[in-house]
Image (cartoon, rainbow, N blue to C red; front, side, top):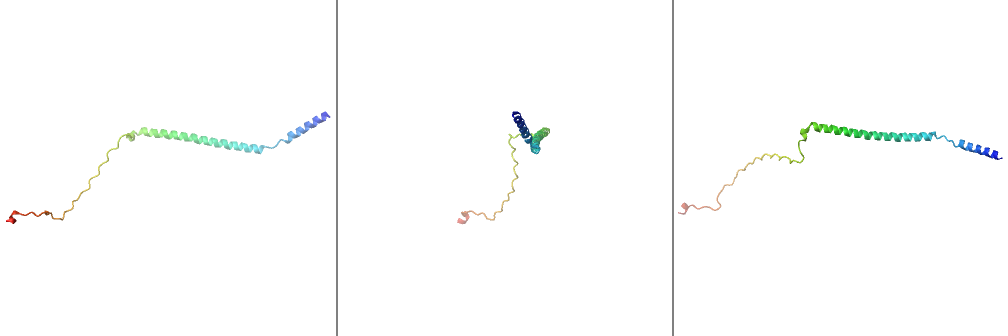
Length: 115
């Protein structure tokens, strides 16, 4: 009887192990796809950052070389005072003619009139 019990127990365990096997291939494939998308997104972001750094370095080098090639335009020092502006020409002044006759306020008597 003990032998029958142990054989029965072995058969039950075998059935349980065999029946627990579930087809997880769909779930595994979904997890793989998610990981691939995540890794692809990380790779694209890393490439964008790398390209941005490379472009900024090239632009800086190009700007520096342009500044070195044309030093004449950089001759102005920001600490210097700006030049005095040019004075505009004077407007022409036209004097209006005076229509008032000039006469003394106090009439002057002449000595000849007094005699």
